Image (tube, rainbow, N blue to C red):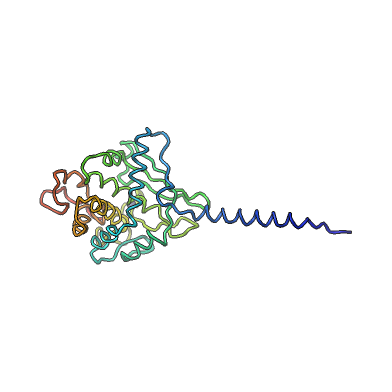
Length: 266
Ligand SMILES: [Zn+2]
């Protein structure tokens, strides 16, 4: 009896196929979204889709800027940062590490909520799909984000970036394989963070939103770099303060009498 031996070239072809297949599998799982891997809900008007894409790409781009790092540090003011349920007292350096090297940004699909949905859910769902191969994130935005990005007033525009940067942070995973959120805060099911006094320290996701917003304002020349901390204080680091319309006359972006009251910190 003679054992069948496949011709050598067949073995080589099979080995190559396994190698290429394996490599593309790993690339699929560890694919990093740099802001270019974005989809927008297909049912939206083309102009709305284009504006959402533009705003989201702008938000992604801010994480690598020096103004963003400066705004994070100034906004945190040396306090420990609630980063996630696994890292309840982290540092600015850790936040940056999760955004700039350790974390993996999921490919994201942007969805616009109806006004009714936005009213019912004050916190816009953003999340990564769980699983080994389909880890796309989805960000649900209120309609006002598009309106804000289309506004004349740069401070109003920057509020769209706050929401986007905050929600993008929720689609960063510290594991390349199983979605493990780098930044967590509250959800509709758990409106309070267990084991924490409300507002006791900055929350990474909110700090990221306000720091991105203020970094953009600094890069636009609307505020000075030295005003980044005051700007983050206006919009909040443990929740979001809706003060978007309070600076339309070109006022300095810092606390002043008569601003809408801050929301109670989470
Ligand atoms: Zn959040």
